[in-house]
Image 1 (cartoon, rainbow, N blue to C red):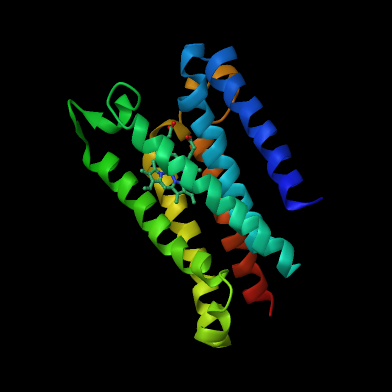
Image 2: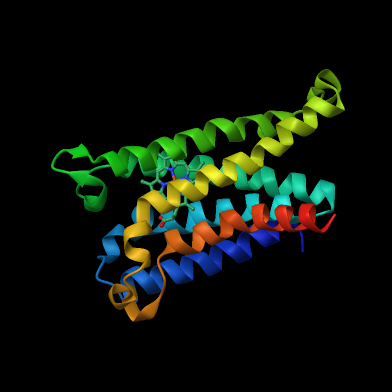
Length: 197
Ligand code: HEM
């Protein structure tokens, strides 16, 4: 499957899950679908593409998946900044300000985005030659740290609800939990390969 087809398929699946969880079985008004609920599908799809980029052995396909993942992650950041307020994310706020956990969650997201800049820059023409292979590889591997920071971002955002399945609409697990598992899968795969070698 081509990288754009992979993106389309994953976006349809994550959007269907988000609509089911928040509108069909949850009580989020449909008016919040274009940005608030779409943001969940966009961020989860972006992260899945980044994770797939680190799981794929076919290097050109991995590069294209990674670049598409970066675009969606950029869209997620823009959408989240537009929405960030107690009215949308009450659980992250104590009154008008973010709680310590809320601030930590956003910091982890910002740090993940900053670290992602390294593999992103590495895809630009001429950068590999300028850096040399060893340094370029280190920049690519920084993506694993970005995935770990994204896992922390998701755990801080939603961790509280992970252990209360009775609150999940129609028993559907939170997207933060599914995203956490998505983010750690390339890390687990890499650790497994290392210990097997
Ligand atoms: C400036 C940086 C970032 C900000 C301000 C930010 C903000 C947010 C917010 C507010 C949420 C909660 C969304 C919700 O519950 O509806 C969220 C969720 C999420 N974010 Fe970020 N984020 C940032 C960076 C990132 C990065 C770099 C990634 C991935 C590489 C990422 C992946 C995710 C995922 C997968 C979710 C869970 C989806 C969900 O339940 O909504 N975020 N982010």
